[in-house]
Image 1 (spheres, one colour):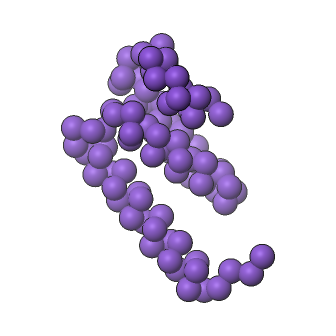
Image 2 (tube, helix red, strand yellow):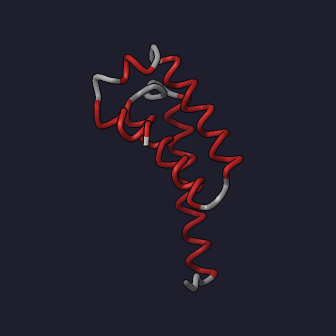
Length: 88
C-alpha cells in the first residue's frame, strides 16, 4: 500500500474536522446523544486501526463518561444498534 503525502494530508484534515465536530457536540446539547456516542465509537475504531492505542484509551474513557452520564449501559440497551457498536 502506497500512500501519497497529499492523501495523508487530506486524511488528517478529515480527522481534524471530525474531532472538531465531536467536540462541538460534546460542548452543546447533543453531548450525550446516540449520534455523539456513535461518533466517539468510530473515532476509537480509527485510533485502534492506526495503532494509536493511547488515543483510543483517552477516547474510550470519554465514551465511558458519556455512558455514565446517560445513566449507564442499561439505559443504552433501548437502542440495540448503538449498543452493538459499543460492545464490538
